[in-house]
Image 1: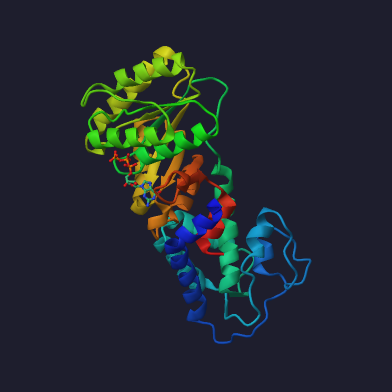
Image 2 (image 1 turned 120 degrees about the vertical axis):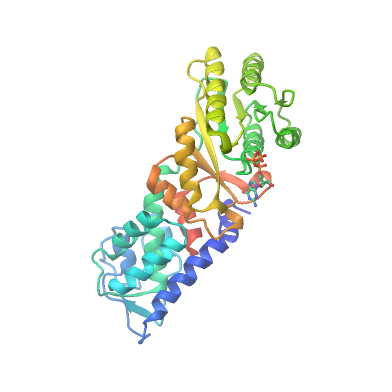
Amino acid sequence: MSFFTKLRERLTRSSSKIGEGLDGIVADSAPDTNTAPEADTPSSAAAGIPAASPPAARPSPGLMGRILGRGEAKADEPRRALDDAMLEELEDMLVQTDLGVETALRVTANIAEGRMGRRVSSTELKQLLAAEIARIMAPVARPLPLYPRTPQVVLVVGVNGSGKTTTIGKLASQFKAAGKKVVIAAGDTFRAAAVEQLQVWGQRAGVPVMVAAQGSDPASLAFDAMTRAEAEGADLLLIDTAGRLQNRQDLMEELAKIVRVIRKKDPTAPHNTLLVLDATTGQNALNQVETFRRLADVSGLVMTKLDGTARGGVLVALADRFGLPIHAIGVGEQIDDLDAFDADEFARALVGI
Ligand SMILES: Nc1nc2c(ncn2[C@@H]2O[C@H](COP(=O)(O)OP(=O)(O)OP(=O)(O)O)[C@@H](O)[C@H]2O)c(=O)[nH]1
């Protein structure tokens, strides 16, 4: 099964909330159902495609073409004239689906631009929304960069339970399968369960997992792991870290010490600091980014658990607010349930087209 198919199937809690929301908005005041769309269809305008072709013509191929080519509006679909009341409903619905107020306002304004008074169907609204979401997310859709310098040190941060361990396990497996030599350091030395779980992932992937005695200094483990990664000629060193936000000062010092120590070996390390976020936390993910940016030099995001939630829209808010690269998304607990983030696919899956 392709990752897009999986994504579409597993994002249904988010996409049905948005889809039903849009259907409801159009149905709210759609007295006549058989009005044909006006010449400049919203979908073509959304993509910046000139409305040269008649509404029934197939959209041009390519990124936007693929978005707009799906779920084409049927002639007999209910329609509603785009007015202030409708835009307000749209904005409320987007806020409820976790896009956040600022992003919801911007998206709604862009959808409205040049279209006030036009009669639009739910399908057209979905197409417009998907195009807007893809536009916001395209600049941040960047896979984890790989550098020629090895070992590339990837520090993985995030609150407990966000999916750090699982993400490290999945990344390690996937990089190993791609021919990279990987070492994992179980840097959350206080949590025996996290260490054990990493060991299980390491065994599964055939990747060594460096562990230390419970409660010992994570920085010292990171140093040892760096030494081993260098000695073994590893391409990647993935370092798990603690996620105790209850005591931010301690955590900040712990992370800073890990960084200080690995820089003794390589002044350019860590090369990436990945923040892992749990989609089910919704708007709280925005606060977590703010907090972890203060604690560590976050260079990119991974969002997990998009499968179990109707709050997937938060990823759009994150992209819009912070502009940090989104390297990967997780839609389940298996190795292949994590993949690079693709803006176009995500936008279509989120809106359900
Ligand atoms: N459904 C789903 N579950 C996930 C996903 N990613 C992780 N999980 C589950 O979320 C739970 C927490 O994940 P961990 O990887 O242990 O999270 P952590 O951040 O390392 O947390 P601690 O081990 O508590 O520090 C586990 O049961 C994972 O199997 C995902 O994309 N989808």
